[in-house]
Amino acid sequence: MSEEELVEAYRRCAVFCMPGVAELQSLVTLEAMAAGKPVVAADAMALPHLVRPGRNGWLFPPGDVAALAARLGAVLADDVTRRRMGESSRELVRAHTLDSTLDAFEDLYGRLTAVPATAPLAA
Image (tube, rainbow, N blue to C red; front, side):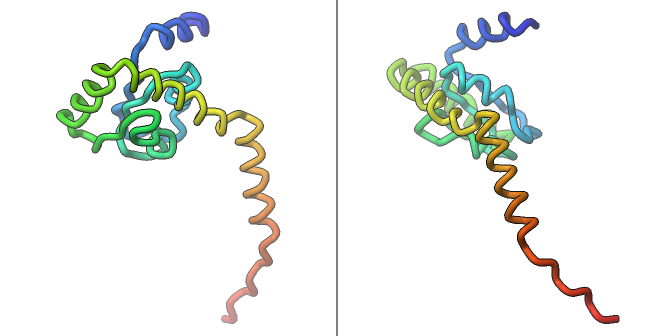
């Protein structure tokens, strides 16, 4: 799929759903958020760090099909909430720009390298 086709797919969708539990960073969730979409995602791995329940979407217990269907149904049934959540997604994704991510890693590595090493244990 070309980048243009992907952007068009995000434009066409009403809500983005990520039911998987193996998402380490979930770049596709970030892309959907950047496209201004509400997110319904499994409460696992990195996804709870991206979804603010009630603000830009909903989380559901992994494997709970009824909860997933209820969350999707709620978002799809309410145009006003869906638009508000999409706008919140766009706001929240700004914290995940490449520059801010690199700054966070640089800060983390700087703090880790500033910690003095402990003395080796005596034998």
